[in-house]
Amino acid sequence: MKRWWIGLLIGLGVLINYFDRTNLSVAATPISNLYHLSDAQMGIILSAFGWSYAAFQIPVGALLDKIGVKWLNRIATILWSIATFMTAIVSGMGLIILSRVLLGIAEAPAFPAASKATGYWFPVRERGVATSLFDAAAKFSNVIGTPLVAWAVTTWGWKGGFWLTGALSLVYAALYWAFYRDPHETRLSQEEAELLREGGAQQAGEAEAGIGKSLAYLLRQRKVWGLTLGFAAYGYSFYLFLTWLPSYLVKEMHMTVLKSGWYTAGPWLVATITDLLIGGWLVDRLIQRGHDVTRVRKTVLVVGMIFGLAVIPAAFTHNPNTAVIFIAIALGGLAFSAPVGWSIPSLIAPKGTVGLVGSIMNFVNNLMSIVAPIVTGFVVQRTGSFESAFVIAGVVLLLGILFYVFMLGKIEPIPDPKV
Image (cartoon, rainbow, N blue to C red; front, side, top):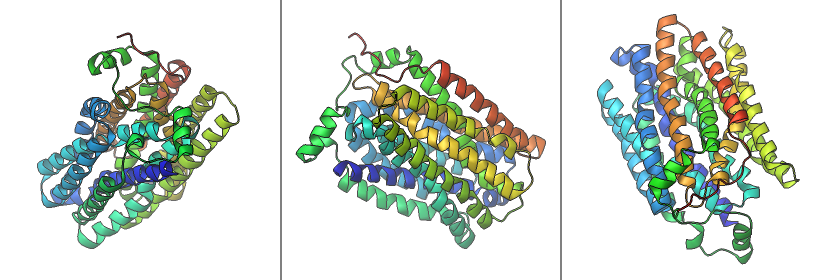
């Protein structure tokens, strides 16, 4: 049972991690009003986290495979707490951008480390639920985090949200230092040790070919690119909603910051539920019943992306309740495809390269965390509405479906490179 406690610890980390990412989106309107920022300028600020987060994905993947999950994440949790506090201390567009860039560096290991740790701690037949624990936490953070930060911003001003999430980050840092260990450092029951050994759990250790050769080898694999580009299409819509949804409700639907926080929570709650029940439980259940692994996972990936296309009709309504329903359908579908995507690196990576595969995927995915906020900001500034921005997201999702269907192929381990 220790593996499930570790899964919950990893999920808690992602939950807190996303509090730190969404606090700026909630405070966006007060900040833009205070510093007289345009929508385009606000889009640049909202994207700043993604600049360094994306840039550090490949180096972080290499470090994870070299020095392991435990120590890299220990250092990262301290650094991301400091960066969050820094955002509350500074003032002005330039220093806020600097704080977000530092936060992106500190939080870069979060998802690749979670994917790698899940590969260590869970057999293949439990990988769906285990992955959905941390992926659903990213969605659930908006259910409780957005209203919580909105309350803090309303009560204490825009800096209040950063003080609150910084304090929560420090608490998590202490918990992680105290409780996370890799399986080989932990006294497991004989039953659990055998389950991990016989169930296909990943083993610790570096790839024999070395980091440079492994990276070059992986970048030549069609399967890696099918996963990476398909997941990046999901990421475009995810980051659009993550960074702009509260502002969309304030600007387009004329809500207060506090009301937008509660309306934002609804679609993210739907996303949390579908992530756990469909992307996690249902996928594992179907595979345990003997259904083809590739067919199950690819079907869930593609159907989830198709549901994501509900972002398009959301663009053409001026009724806030109707808009939120369409957004909930879109996020719900995208959410149950995401844990399947995150489970794939540990299923296809050659030995010792799970961190690298996860980081390649997350690097391109997080380029979308730069592109989506900026494109949305400029489109909204030019057109005066979010309609075109939502349609663009739908077109990107269609491309992602094609990459999943025609490039990913069978979900099975890539052969080890010849040393």
